[in-house]
Length: 188
Ligand SMILES: [Zn+2]
Image (cartoon, rainbow, N blue to C red; front, top):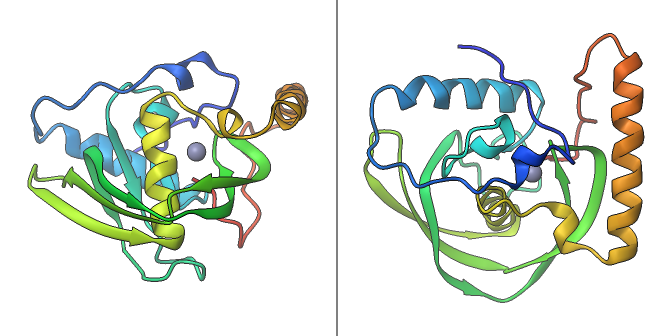
């Protein structure tokens, strides 16, 4: 297993939509292990393949460590995820591993039913609400090349853009490029 580098906004690779996985081969397992390890190390509760520069429709999720999750999911792998049904609305203060230190209120569907393939290629369905629903929608956005900045006002978008440029400047002077996310604020 190996830690992968999480791309940070405005890296253009974050805008490349993921391609559907044609068939779930055993080789995908190594990538999924790397993604899980990278997510836990950040630490984060979700990570999409597009965040490590791989244009594939795959993400990992683990809400177990988070108090805000209505139910603990353990590690889950979503391959070729689709939202089948959506209801209601929720506003959640979201963080994103590609936007260190940024947290913004984002409007999402409050309840969803989603379908995906698991790591052995078997289809499964979930019904999700709260942070679970938010996380799935956030990760599917990543697979479409859609980012947190696309879901806030123009004013906030400019503010976040400037803040991220400063983050990259400061990162050049830091010994380590990575900076742990503050505890208790789930990043996706
Ligand atoms: Zn994210």
